[in-house]
Amino acid sequence: MQERIQQLTAELQALTAHSEQEVEDLRIKYISKKGLVSQLFDEFKTVPNEEKRQVGQLLNALKTLATDKINELRASLSAGGDDEGLGIDWSRTAYPTPLGSRHPLTIVQQGDLRHLRPPQLLYCRRT
Image (cartoon, rainbow, N blue to C red):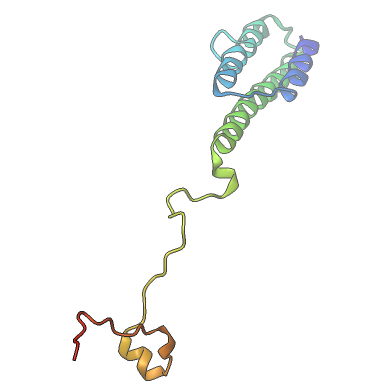
């Protein structure tokens, strides 16, 4: 039984998944009520009393490893699935917008007259 636990531990450490469905399938295979880890806990009842302490520790470590690995795979897929890893804020506008403009009197007081447009004539009088 200890060999089987070590084999499953090596198998769990090498797990990879490319989609949420694969992660769910792995969770069902290893952690579910009828999964491999639960089967080992059922077989634990037949282990001799002298070995129960050591095998129990290995089983608990295996279950923790399986749960952590599944959660890690799920987190890596949800973090890398969209463009969240790129640091892109999709709610921003595509072009930079100025926050405001200075009041015309402030511009005149500061002597920065190059920003003022010349007045537009609405009509032109001929003489």
